[in-house]
Image 1 (cartoon, helix red, strand yellow):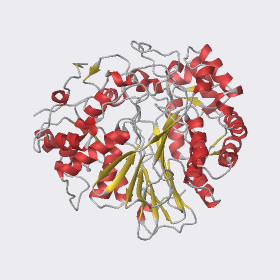
Image 2 (cartoon, one colour):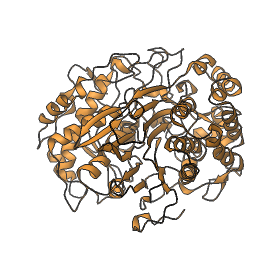
Image 3 (cartoon, helix red, strand yellow):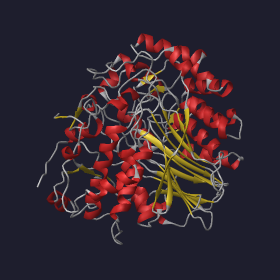
Length: 606
């Protein structure tokens, strides 16, 4: 039997990477994460939205009510999140937008599920060795060339129906006139501003100027946050399209800041950036068609591989509990194998010929057959030709939102700055944050260790290359119609949060509200441990000992929360869509002209 007790600091290093421990400082004042509460629920047949922000979800629904389609609403939500959820909503980051056009007939060219890949790219000055001995993950040098604004423009040109300017105007007003901070945003801002390094270091002076409370006190719910510089930037984008970000005043400001702060992004990098429209990964599982983001997202392939293995294992629900010991054991064995394949083979397909046989149905059946139903497989035994060393990571600070309109067009969008508030570098006079996504590359060629660093070749740094991501926007169809839209933040935990939600809804036949509310767990090959959510000590009561007896290392950190699934489920008989927003980060579900849902889980005042 293998078991261990790890300190909180070590757990954080395992989950977030070696650099985080150096960044964690005692807070100047006690801060408390908002408590658990019911998921937020909304229903309707004229369109629904689930996002991390009540204001952003409302803006998306207003767009749908005014005749916009799901892509219009998704773009409006994305710009709103840049104002109302700055830790992950962004202009200076990137992501993946999965779009399923309306229509139930056999797929034609205009009905294929596509992915707008607006992932950041490595600046032209970056090389394979640029970060070999680098340790400062909050440095402006960590910023990749942003993709969000050009990605939204690409989606709008391909699918949009409303004027571009109309989609940004609500966010301009929010930034210029301000909005009332809720308890989740107050906690988010206070957490970073109370860090002594952020509070005192000259590098973060612009961050403090933009986000600090006017009285230099802690933010409280009901305070008003104004962002006039961001309003001007959004006005420029509204008037000039994405060129208003990638050329002219804004691009000059980014270039100037990079030169003064030893960053890598150049004016030419901005000018040259282009998103890529890719065909979504499609997998047939349990009688459903599961669509996900293709590489450089690892989400579509890895979620699909996990679901195919789970299908082979024949998991069955138990009526009175979300998960059993057998569920956790078998799904953790599935996770460790899928994450091994992810580490070995995935990266930017425009730079490497990816070997995808390891994600096929045949590979899934073979991997599932190797699972011992009573004993854990040590992760080291799965390494194969990946050389391991004893001793890059992805942050949990991302955001996901889901949208469906009255015609059945669906959008699943995940976007990020990488860590919370990205590089903490606010572009002077422009009011937006730059990402620190260069941390998602493999920094040390050939160096893979048991703590979670990966050094395989497919994801090494190269100029213009997109870094591997765990973002997993997912759309599930049944008989050609959208049945489920799902995604989550959470770094590498995203893949498992999405997979667990799909298993709960489609395999175990539970409501989406119950699936989102259910406790979550995570295994990512290395570190070789199962991480359990810890907000409810009773959620895994009686399971830890049996799991340890099967050979698992089990870690349950008090208060730990995994992801924030904002999802939509459609009843194909009635056409009613149910949006569910996760309580873990204060999500909000909204519907167009919907009546209040007669469900106690929806009792959440806004």
